[in-house]
Amino acid sequence: MKDVKNDFESFKNDAGQAAGSSFVLNKIHAEIARTAPRKSSVAVKLGGIHLVSSFFSLMACPQFGTKLFFSGEGLMDVFMKISPMFCQAFCGAFYLAVTFVLARLVLKYDEWLVLMRSRVLTIGSVALVSLGVFAMLARGISWEAGVFWIFGAVVAGEMASVSKMTLKKYFSFS
Image (cartoon, rainbow, N blue to C red):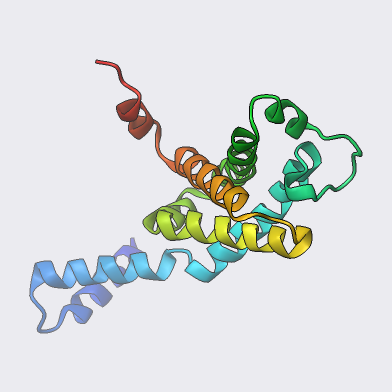
C-alpha cells in the first residue's frame, strides 16, 4: 500500500501547473516512447533474420546462379518449365516471403509494428539490397530479370506482411 501512495504522490507532484488530461496523455506518451523498441535494433534483427532466411532459400533455389550447397537446380528447374519470367518473379517472391514469414515468427509484436509503420520502405530496401548483392555476386543480371525479380519480391513481401483481415478483404469474392 505504501508503494501506491508514493506513486500517487510523485504523480501529483509532477502534475504541477499542467492541465489534467494533457498531463496524463504526455505521461502515457513518454512511457510508450521509453518502452518501445528502437528502429535500429529492429533493423539489425531484420538483417539477421534476412541472412538466415537467405541461407535457407538459396539452398532451395539458386537465384541468379548463386548456390550454397547443392549442385542441382532445385526449385528453379520446376519454375523454368513454366516460363523464365515466372521463374524470375517467383524466385524473388520465394526469397522475400521466407524473410518476412520468418520475421513475423521471430520478432515480438511491438518490433513487428515498428517494421509495419514503414512497410513500403522496409520491403523495398530489403528487396533492393538483396538484388544489389546478387548483382555483385552473379555479375550477369539482365535488366528484365532484375525487374521481374523485384516485382515478385515486393508482391510477396507485401502479402507476407499484411494482416489476415487485409488478406480476406483483398480476396473476398462477395
